[in-house]
Image 1 (cartoon, rainbow, N blue to C red):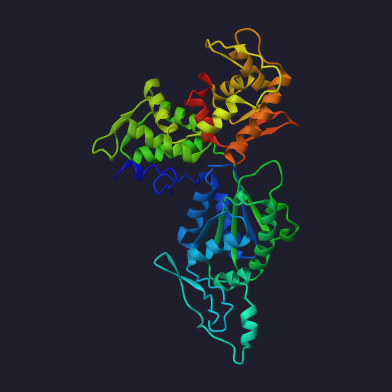
Image 2 (tube, rainbow, N blue to C red):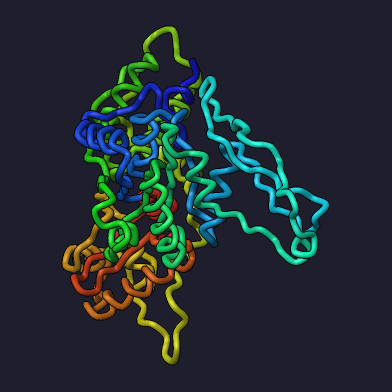
Length: 419
C-alpha cells in the first residue's frame, strides 16, 4: 500500500477518517435527510471537513455533487445537475419541421453510477399551427425538470461552496429549492460563514424549511487522531512530540493535517508501507523540511505580496520601523510578520496583536490607529486578490480573523515578510 492511499489531502480519507466529535451531527444529518422536508444548511470554515463529512454519512453514490463556484444564473447550477445525472437538454426548435424533444425521466443508480432512464418519446401536437412554430420557442422550465428527475429518488443534491454564488442568485435559488423540497427533492447546501447572515438562513422563503449544522475548526486532539490512525496503518512508530507539532501547525484543518502527515512520510522516504516498523521522531530540521515541502502546495504568493505592499500611498511615505531581525519595514510588513510567528493562530484580538507587533520592533513600534488601519486595508486587499473572504477584519470588535488555514501556513513558512 502507498502512503498516499493512507493520508489523502483533497480526497476521501478511507483509512484516516476521524468522526468521534461528529456523532451528533451525523445523526442530525441522517434524520433530516430521511425526513425529506427540509434543506440541510451546513456552515463552517474553509478546510474544516464539511464535504468529507457529508460524503461519509450519506455515501458518495447517493450524492449529486455540484459547486457554486462560477454560477452566474440559477440555470447554470441546474445544468450541472442534469449533466451529472445524464439528462438530455434540448431546446425546441422554432421550425415546425423539428419536433420538440421529450426531456427527462427519473434517475437510477447501478453499481454506484448515476444513469438517466428515458421516460418519453418525442412527440408533436396534432394540428399544430406551423405559423406559430416559426415565431415561438419553448423555454425549458428547469425547476419542473429537476423535480421530475429527482423527486422521491433518494438522491441528494449537494451544493458545495454555495457562498460563491452571488447573493441575488442565491435568493432565486432559495425560492426554487423551497419548491423542489416541497415536491420531494432533497438538498444540502454547504457554505463558509461570515459575520453577515447566510442568505439561505436569512431568506424568508426558507424559514421553517431548513436545518442548520455548524462546523468549526478541529481541536488539536482530533487532528492528532488522523496521525495516530495513519501512522499505525503505515507501520510507522510515531512520537507524540512530532504529532503535537503537526497538529499545532495544521491550525484546525483536517485537510492540512493530512498534507503534513503525508509529507512527513515522503520526507522520510516512505512512499510504500514498509515491512518493518519505521520510527518518526521530532527533530527541528526534519520538521522544518516537512513544512517547507507542504508550503509548496499552498501558493498564496500573489495575495501575500499584495498584503505586504499595502494600499498605494498618497502623499508622504509610510513610517519605517526597525525590526529585531535586522530588516526595516512599514506597518504592513510588521503585521504580516506578527501573523506568522509562534504560536500559530487564526484569530487575533487587538491587544495580543499589538503586543506581537511591538515584540518585533527594535525601538519605536506602530501606534494603535496605524495597526487597525493596516488590518482594515490588509483584509480588503487579501479578499479582493483571492476573490474570496480569506481574511476578515471586524472593526467593531477589533478582531482580525484568518479564515483559511492554508493562508496562515503560507505566511508562516514562505518567510515572505522576511524578504
